[in-house]
Structures are given as structure tokens and as C-alpha cells.
Image (cartoon, rainbow, N blue to C red; front, side, top):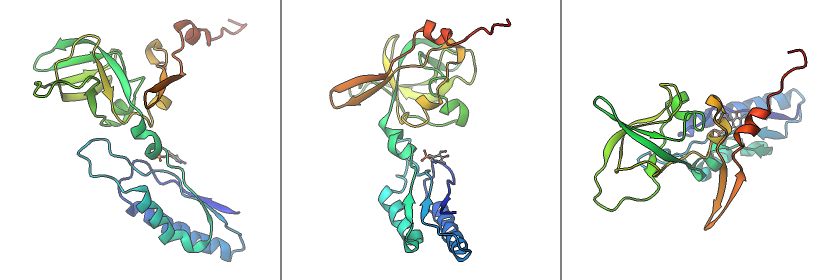
Length: 229
Ligand SMILES: Cc1ncc(COP(=O)(O)O)c(C=O)c1O
């Protein structure tokens, strides 16, 4: 055995659990070395959290995480690998959706958008919070009112957020779900026969479609009928 690999969880906003785990990794390394194993590599997994709302207390910085790794494991002289995922891409991506229509319900109003739970499953699956903002900034002083923001899929779970304050919006207006860069596209599905939405890479004023939307036929034609049917 030449290495130890650990991954303790995701969206951790405190270094304490990492530190506890890495102290155990240090102990285990010593035990295994005493047993004759030349441990020279430690893979410490991912898990460092990101802010999902502006009001979040900022999670620990990578610099502090690195210093803690050095403090707990540096003396072992091992090659260190880390696997941060969300930290790298989470706040680098947004999901853009268009308003289909506004529906007034009993006591609450719904904003029905063309994105759905199959495109961004985190709210339905984890009750995760994503900040939702209009793509065009409203004029200063524009009144906002609360909406339940939902997709068009036939599920009560197709709810992105409840009672979010938004300025007046109408059919075709665009909204953005923030922090959708991690566990967004990769957890998307074609549920309800909805083709996967395109992914667009943006830098400055340049953009490129890096994963085009499949046509309906392309999606359906992946299915094959067995010879025996
Ligand atoms: C083994 C392993 N490494 C890294 C990651 C990435 O985690 P995160 O995106 O929280 O950094 C995961 C996610 O579950 C994982 O299972």
C-alpha cells in the first residue's frame, strides 16, 4: 500500500471536520508505515464549501484550508492530492431560464419558468437554496413582490424557491439561478422527455456553446428496439 484516500463530505463550511479527519489520516499513515507500508501519497478528497447567498458567512478560504493541511499532514513528507469540485466551479456557473407565465394562486403568485427540476435538481433533491435574480437589472426603486418560482414539469417537487422577492417580470423575461456551476448540468436528466439544455462557456465578451442542446429526435433515437421485440 502506498497511499491513503479520504473524502468526508461536501459543502463543508468549517475546517474543523476536515482537521479531525486529517489528524486520523496522519495517525493511520504512521501506523501503516510502522507496519512496513511505504505511504507516500495522501488524497484528501474534496468538500470545501462555497457561499450560496450573499448573506452567507464566507466559508474558509483555500489558503486557510491549505495551511491546515500543512499543519496536520505536512510533517509526513507525502505527496498531497485534493479533489475540490464545487469550490472551483460552483460560483462560476448560472442557469438562465425564461419566464413562461405568471399565475396567481390562492394567496400566492407563481412564476413559471422554462427550466425545471431535471435541469437543476438541487432544490428538489436537497431543498438547496439558489439565489435567483432577473438577468436585466431593474431600475433603482422598482417594487419587488414574492413569487413561488416553479418549473413546468408535472411534479409538486418542481419548485425552485418559495416566496422570493422579484421585480415585475413577464413572459420571455430571463432570470438567472446563481451558483449553478457545480452539481447542476452533471446532475441533469432528460426526465419528461426534456432534451438536456445547452452549456455555454463565457469569458469576457466571448462565448461558445460547449455542449449543444440535442434535438428531440437525437434524444429519442438513442433508444433501440431489441431484435426479439
Ligand atoms: C471522492 C470525491 N472527491 C471529490 C468530490 C467533490 O466534492 P466537492 O464538490 O464537495 O468538492 C466528491 C463529491 O462527492 C467525491 O465523492
